[in-house]
Length: 116
Length: 110
Image (cartoon, rainbow over all chains, first blue to last red; front, side, top):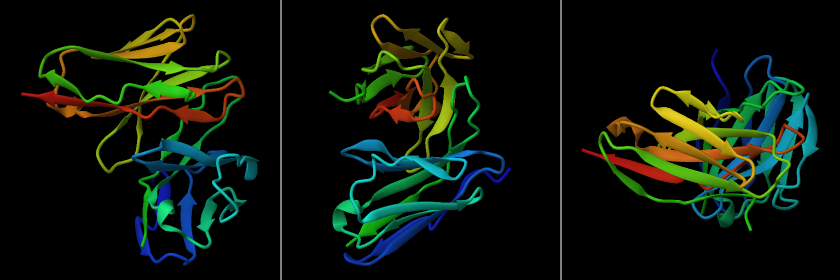
């Protein structure tokens, strides 16, 4: 199994530019999560999907952030326009959600975003 | 108050010693608990789940105290390779969403 695949691994962009981060979850997993990690705020949940449907986006900072999951094998997180305070490592994670069982997340390697 | 809190450390541990640290959570309805390990500039990786009765995996022991709302991780016979940041994760009653603590940094020294 290739695990959770994220791209790009590193992105450096200028303030105001659009940023698109991509994620391919583990095949067969039915839940997908986007987290953001910074030194100041730690690992924060931005949004998660069950069966491609967004369930909780309360962690999305503001309207500049949007996430989609058009099918079971692909998700994007878009920031438009980007700002320096968006600089962080963005992790995608997936899991196989089974009713009544604990939800074990597998993380991708992350996308390190720097907004100048 | 944060939902999940950890002592950030660092815990400086002599090789071969035992170290233990806790993670407190605020939601009494939480149902699932985990410890993840994160190496520098890497992704978090599952270390172990935490069960109500406590559980052990080699040199690692995890405990859950529901009354006081904390989980703990104990590492025995520490190895240099145990140096990492340990993140606790707590799942709510809905069972799906995981909230992470800020992490406890452990440095094992020769």
